[in-house]
Length: 141
Image (cartoon, rainbow, N blue to C red):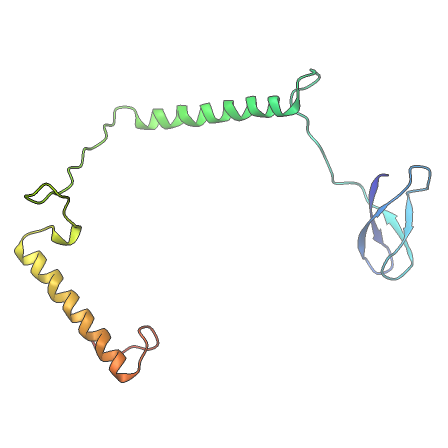
């Protein structure tokens, strides 16, 4: 049974209704007010890839997807042509283990980061003592 879309001329209500192929499908009673509703032009459409061949649709769609993916990789390789990836050497300590980012920099940078971390911890503890949550309102820093 086909599904038709109708619009009521009285109240403007749009609804769908299943009709038997033997029934007249040009009008239907409105489901909201009961007046006569007219059939709308269907907006449903279907595209079948692959044309008139006997090939399954998913095979055609898969081939089209592969073409699009190939064009994407071609564009990416054109953008990257002549460019070389940088090699980044991760910092290691004397014993060969990787160092955290906080340990990077000279002594002054590490000292500044440590001072900031201590100040931030003190600030948070002060807010807790005052009964203020971390993000509720501004407080002195």
